[in-house]
Length: 396
Image (cartoon, rainbow, N blue to C red; front, top):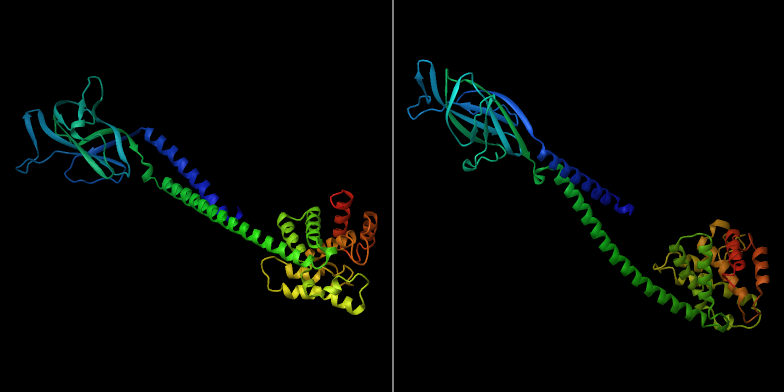
């Protein structure tokens, strides 16, 4: 989870951005804008740079003269062309143009729009004309409407008011695009990672099964050399796992130490069988040879990398907490934790089972041995965990 935190942040942040963008676009597409402009007539297409600009002009005739005429001594007639420029990056829709009426006028004709001239109103209203294809005004484009009007003098300025809405498109909104990209990039990353993790875990599970199977075979081979210890390795493995659980160590540690317990006596395969199976007490020479099984185990497992600390446990599970053990004479916390746990489990099983040289001890005798050797042979905390398990009946 921690390794993929940024991907989850991308997904959440992208979703929030995209959602806010959708809400904003919906609201903006509903919002009506009202813009008032005073436009001067001219022949040049000069815009102010605002989102909306309106210009009007008296167009030229074929002879190069303005298309206006003297109607009589007090009245002029003229054609007026009006341009509505959309300088924004959005399409304009639902537009309505209002042209302020001059002091005296007569609207003669019009085109490219639906003109409404109601008495009592200050504005002539112009709406889009379907036939003129000016229902919308594309981004950075313009539309043109025109009319002929008679006035007392030619108009060189006009008051306009335009009401409109912008068609905000999500595909053009940078916040939405960034949000969607972050969302799908993060989601794709998470999906790919989970697929890869699934296959890796599946392969790891299969590998663990093979390792556990091999460990079991090796442990049985070690134990079968002595009929009195034919379940010793599996017992030590199970006791070690229970001790680790009692101490609150994590599940991964418990699984690992189980395998370490299975192979802790690997070095015994190099000890002569007559020493291992001798019914009586070992001579000093035989005992020195028997103690070498820790060194042999350490060497045999030195290059094995399938299980963490396997070589360490095989080498050090007969070290004592007071430093009087073998083969290195390590003491206290210098002895690896796994080896200290297996030491207690190994000693318990040795006391709890019949051996060629003695009968098993009773539970009371075993508890006494554990208590008396707490802090000398055994790590106190580990010994206390074993004593607790025995008293609770989880090990008997």
